[in-house]
Amino acid sequence: SQVFKIFERFLASFLPAGKITSLSLAQMIVGAIIFVVAHPFLLVMHTDLSKTYSNKKYDRFSEQLNRILGSLFFLFIPISAGLFAMAKPLVFILLRQGKFSVQASIDTSLAIRIFAVGFLFQGLNLFLARVLMATQMTKKLAIISTYTWLGGMVLDWFMVKQFGFKGLAITFVIVFIIQDIILFRLVSNEIGFAIKPLYKTVIRVIISSAIMYVVVHYLVGLFDFQIVGFEQKIIKAAILSAISIAGGGLYILLSHLLGCEYPKIVYNILFKKTIK
Image (tube, rainbow, N blue to C red; front, top):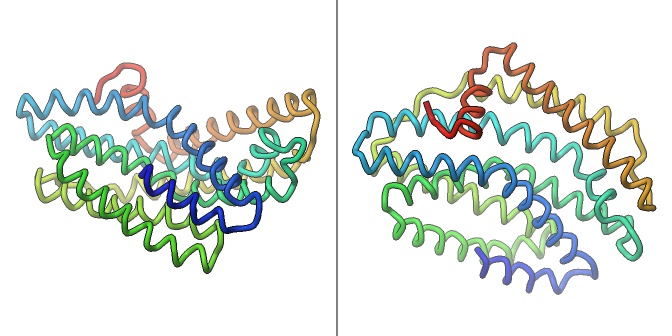
């Protein structure tokens, strides 16, 4: 993926000034969120899965995979919705200053929204990669990763001509979707991983996330985040943090009212370090 990013920056260097910066900053912001949210979750998960698989408790292993997969949907879909709703104010608070113009801020927020759509797929990718590592299939993982990123580089060449820096961001998401499909089929075939129906969970999560998005989008629209000055930025950052906390609380409440069991499961994984 690092070679892909270098090639992506090479293509972006032919675009108008500032586009490569917007793309890089958008990836950096979304990557930071993934690191903060996803990595602790997946690190605990990987440890438990490795122990279960090495002890040949395959029924429990399959059950753990199902619970983690449902937890990923529960955790990452609302983050995608919230990030999509708050991309523009987030960029204006963090980056809009001096020579970083309004247009650069708008371009960066647009790229963040594209990456936000792919946030779930990046999370699933990290999950499936760790499943393959836990089951000692790292060679196949490396082959799949290499060929899909090479294919992404070819697709980048066409996308950048049609859509500019937006095409590069879209290709980044497409590669993760393709990898997820291939890795999921590999896990299913090699391990015999049977997915329990998650349709009800996904529908509940989507409904809760959609309502949360509407509320957060409305609250964000009540304030002017196109400001400069350190003190104003601190105030608006506090407001945006309060909106995000309120949105998260609303999502958890709605998912609980809709009968979703995953708030407790996610809590157990993150804080009790168990996958029951």
